[in-house]
Image (cartoon, rainbow, N blue to C red):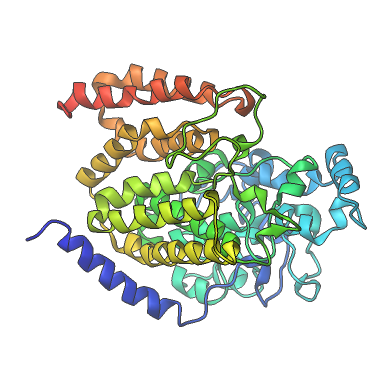
Length: 449
């Protein structure tokens, strides 16, 4: 059988699935659901999800509410809108109302459904809570406590399918990247809002998780590989960014492009400091698309769909060139949008292919190797950040088998984290040097060249 033929069949079959799925209604995000939001208080009982300690004879931990309230920063997201920093941001942006009364801010700092769907116990002050992720609980809140009701039945009743990688990525990206209604623009960041980034597995770990992926969980919700979550998360994050770039209503602020979609370091660096070497030889001072996810996706495609790698590289190069080269076309903006849409369509077609792809151990190993060999490209902070989080995600599955190098791997991960601790002091050469050590670990363990 010719190389890449199996991957091609997966791609073709998945594309057919993609066309079928996108012809039907897409799952609404919790904030847009047309059912009543009952408020976190309905989940907080000690006999529900507010237990002080996990229950032994239960399919779920039962202490989810207290884990969220005491350890998850999402529980404090609304309070952040009342801070002095948020007050100053609102003033700098000349907002007509304070941040805690502004829809744009509320959409991501709390659960903010339409007022007609806010029940008697609903409170904006709950922050990003139970229904922000699991959906308005008017119907599924009752059914999920009944014996014999399946997870799929609860989803039909309005439970948001967070166990499905695509749905999970769309949910997290809706605030951590942006969508048609939510977006942390360059103006918002210039006023003081923190820079945003996302990698699904890493962020779930530090949330911290309020569930246990045991055999019962897998039986009810499926056994999804963390690597598959990582891969689909990368594709969905890129999709969200490219959708904004391709939309003329969202990719410009007056004469300027929407700078939040580009690399911060293209402009934000001490004058005289050495800039990263561009992958397409861009001149200094030229805006560069934030393509960190594309670097991760390149490693995935190289292994999973090698016959698509040339097309992918060509589309990425075409977009980069249309963004950076001197353009003599009558309407260069249309050229950029056209190239963006071509790459966007390619990645949208890839998502169901990634859902169908079997991430077997030998393929995970190859993806890992492709990542570590790509270390010279991680010269920008955002690229390095994603590369580090990729190590964390894949390492959970792969590096745990490297007993000979356990101490060295732990030390290297700690050093990489240290290199990323301050984006303003990031030294790419140090990060690349440390990241490259993982190639050595592979060689020592398996004789990989």
